[in-house]
Length: 130
Image (cartoon, rainbow, N blue to C red):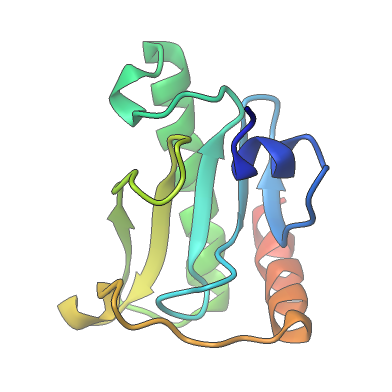
């Protein structure tokens, strides 16, 4: 059975996509920890990030680096926090979260953003990446 991320990759489910290449996709988390929280996902459906073939693993992190530079141009922050948890969706992914302090990356504190806010933000970040 396809993961929710594979359904997004295949355009079977909508998402607020900020960037995409032949191997990876990045989209806004719809239940973000902070404004600008982006998920970076390999198109190859593998549950554990460390089980990705080396070329896909390297591609994913290089793509995440590119996406992080776009986020920083739109969301004022000290840095982009990186988290790989892998429990929520059985498909490898990286969380990129704009942070100013350690508490900003607390997954127990989610913020609410409406679809208009998410759409506008995804466009702004996408413009800075592409």
